[in-house]
Structure formats: C-alpha cells, structure tokens
Length: 320
Image 1 (cartoon, helix red, strand yellow):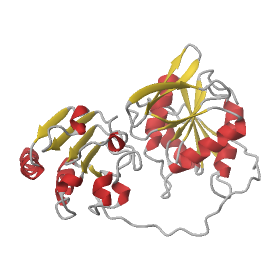
Image 2 (cartoon, one colour):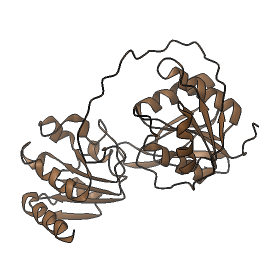
Image 3 (cartoon, one colour):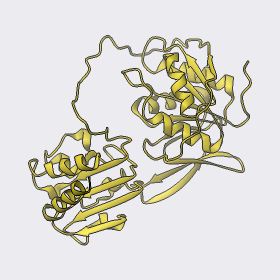
Image 4 (spheres, helix red, strand yellow):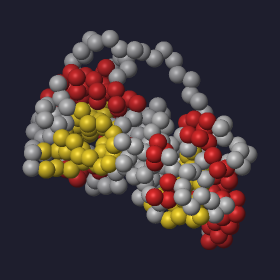
C-alpha cells in the first residue's frame, strides 16, 4: 500500500548515538502537523517507529542505515521523496541534518531553505520563515522549483502533533554508490551533568563578560540549577576563558529558542542576539541601562548582578 495524503510532509527524524529519537523529532513533527500530514522517515531501527507515532507521525517509513556517513540517509530520503511525493521535506538544522538536506537538494534539483523558525502555507504552497541579518529582520522564503527542503532551527517550534496509531512501512532503498566517509570506532565522551542540553533546552541561563572571571561565572551555574536550566554564554565570556566554547550562544555558536532566556552581564551585541532573540521570554540583568540587550528583553533589571542574582536565587529557593 503506497497511498499517501495529498498534503503529506516528509520529516527526517534524527537518532542519537544511544539509539533514541533526537529532541528535534517532536518539533519537526509538530511543525509538519501545522501544514499537512506528517510522514516520518527513520534511517535505522524500526523500534523507534512507535516513538515517532506517539509524537504525531501519521506514517513511519523505515530504511536500513546502510554503510557510510550521510549518503545512506540521502539515498533513503530520495527514495521516500519518490514514494510519498510530499509538499515539503523538513529536516533538523543539526550538523547531520544540514548536510543531508543540502545533498538531497542538489540530487533532486530542489530549492533549499535553511535555519527556518517556522513554516506555513500560502496560495502556492509551503513557505519558510527566517530571522536574517543577525535577527534584525523577519523574512519569508518560498521555493520556486522542486520540492521545498527546509531545515528547522531546534527549539524554535512550540507546536506539537497529536499522537497517531503506528503505521509502519519498510521502504527499499537502492544505494547510490556515491563516495561516503565511514566510522571505524567511536569513543563516547561521558559528561556527568543534571542540566539539560543547551540546544533545544526549555530554559537557558547565560552569562557574559560582566561576570568578570571564571570563578564568578559560577553564579550562572547556581541560577541555572535552581531553574533547571541549561547554561549558555556570550562569545566575550567564552573568549575570556570563563566557560567552554560549546556553551556559546550566538551567530558563531548555538542558536536557541527556549521558553525562558536569562541573560546575566551580557551587553547584547547583535551576534549574540542572533542566536537567542526568538526566546519566548527574555530576562536581562545588567548594570548598564543602555545595554542593547534591553532592546529585546521582556523584563529588564538595571543593577549589579552580584547583588540582584543572589537575591533572585534565594527567592526561588524559598518558593520550592
């Protein structure tokens, strides 16, 4: 049976190295559900199909992973595209997702829209919404040839699709034989942390150069632990050695779109704002009343972070 809804949206779901669906899966299926019928593609274990259905996939296509990096995924996407004939293809704006989307666009001669923060339909089809020029402008893009292939910014989509009964279909994929890198071995880097991962976190507490030192940056950690938030940082804080580069939020770091973003001692340069200003609620604490971060903050406190934040932590702990 190969019939699919006329408004089908093909969604590539990433899997983590531990064999679970990536956090982006719920967002991608939620976005697809706002514009059509989500059809999930999993390149790997069929055991993930039920999880995908619970997240809203009307149909789950499962393909064997094949040998090599990325190319087997692109082969599976091309096969699913031919089978489903979707109105659009949604992929996570992850490292793996970006490469797969770009290769699929070239192979199928389709238009590619990257780092979208939303999708919708107009009279002519599916369109993507973006923030550009460091987040200064909101724009809409439309693909005029082929199938729109859209990478979605992780954490930017609030919509969630309703759970569906599992309809799992295995698809046959013909290997393209294109050159592909391979992995000989993997050494997992074990990081012991009770905090959520920065990318896709619902709450983020970020610190900037205003913290003054790596030792004083611990104030960010304390507030994050009280809120159950991930820890982020501005590039200035990273360059100063307060925290590792993996925590950098901004144009040259991680783009986040949490429910709550708390900026401590961050001036709010446009490069930083580009990576966080899609947050639903932004709280800024800075002693400089003219700091650009206050231009986009929903709530702003002008004051010394070493006075304000300990009081905030005490108030939050008292409520627990």
